[in-house]
Image 1 (cartoon, rainbow, N blue to C red):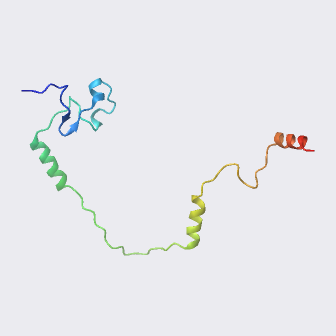
Image 2 (image 1 turned 180 degrees about the vertical axis):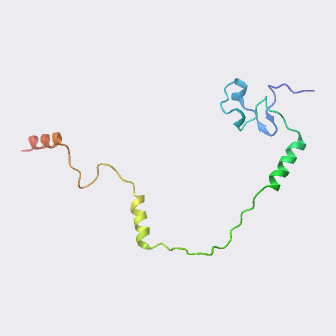
Length: 110
């Protein structure tokens, strides 16, 4: 007996894309969910793809480094700490108010 398309929740191990069913999926073939119109693969095709992926996989190794490693001085670390501090606009000692504000300030001063 064939399942009704509305009752199927998983295709090829992927959940159904409900936006596609409603006609609103914007990802198309790049969608991480399964679409009803996707070509379904057999178990043999899935197995051969896995075998190829394992065969072509690259193994990364950490080799000991042979070269000059520059140590950071304390001054460099202090400069990095100063650069990390968030700058807040308008909070400096050298900030001068505008002309209009200064004029108002002097006129209200006793």
